[in-house]
Length: 347
Length: 248
Image (cartoon, rainbow over all chains, first blue to last red; front, side):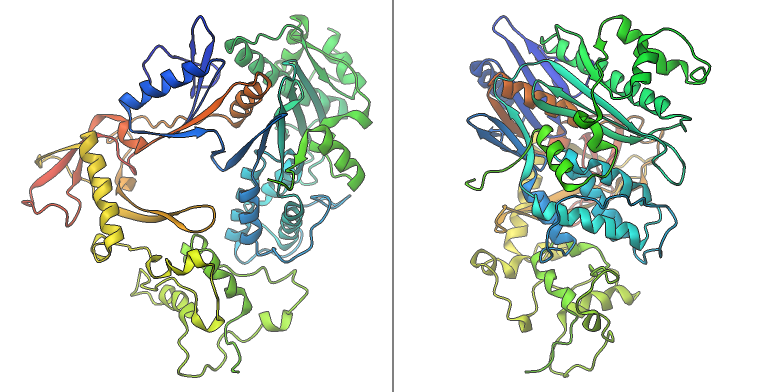
């Protein structure tokens, strides 16, 4: 679609860049929606005129609403939230009149594949979970429980549905919560990784959880069931670190392409000392020899000084929120750490 | 006061025209409701006074009767709720029904305009040539899909008609090889936004009108003339030069 002196990013095919002597113009294409940003306002206008001459374009001015994400420009930074979408979701679930809850999931409850009665109509369940998955774009605080309930899309049961309803009641109380990207924060990448060993009661697979900050802004996170069964918690942590490491390498590439090459190695915080030891220490132990070779890419990244591996105590481990259910206080503490803030009532 | 014969769950219907396009009406999730378990388990068909029409029952009937594939039910809130919609809603209630065919749409001014706009866009883009049908090809059908675009307060923004090709008859390798849509990863979007925020860069947004029509087609795709629009001889077809919604 585009030919005018833009180059396509290697790291994301829908990202287009134009580098000039003044600065860089970034064009982000999402099917028919385009976001333009640049260090230079004049350059943006130039591109807009250029695009206007070729396509039927509608200029929507400053970015405020993009793919259901609402963007607020505030004096201290950008605020990204999905308030309208959450409200529609609550209405879809017919839960507008219920009371809200403080945490998205109950403590110490394991959801199993075949517990409880099958739902007569799984479509509603699938519709709700699908909407919740879209909501995780700005709500990392629910991504762990959404990852759990989405495991049961195939054959949802009543117990699973009650879990979904609880998430939506949590959303009801916090619908204006979203991510905050502060102005003038540093561009140093920080990563946290954690794992929940054998967390899935059906398959005994572990869960990977990691998140990354660019300065103070949370830009990337993941909560995913691992592909293989791990025999020890160290191994599960190690796999999680390896997954996080791949993302760090990708983000490094993306940032370098945008001319913000990270100067320092990224610190990947983990709370498991033995996993750190395995990654930093080139000795194959008896108990780690079955971990696949590709997992050892993390060792290579460490050797090339792309990452460092500081230890962090479990209480300060932010990625904790992606691997377990937690009590109210801890949940609030971690959502604060994730730079998740509520929209001020004035807006 | 006569007793309301409809279960309370239906009272949400007038609020959301979008959500009940599906044939199955939205049911409340019965099992975990503590309240009103008696009312929600009412016998489904309580005796009704004969003079009360039951608009909400219409879609259920329509799906149950195999001979009626498309409901002709007009979507509006039943009067007996004495539902008083916000003022922006009242003005538009009469026109909130979505036509399902070109013929139905042409009966209304607003939809006729929407179709015109869509056809003008095709002309401007030179989407197709009208050629006699080659004997070896079997052209695709096409239809109009109608929708109402609303603003965030529920008032009507515009009426939209979109011509789509019935691409479900497409065969891989024969009609198309490659499918592609430029979709950005959410992480990339967040990274760019975080970067723009930290550097205080201005952020602008643009929207491509009729985005699909900008895709150039490599394959030969023939489309039957959209019904009712052109009074043409039966042997003519549109040879598409640009991509169309519904194609792969």
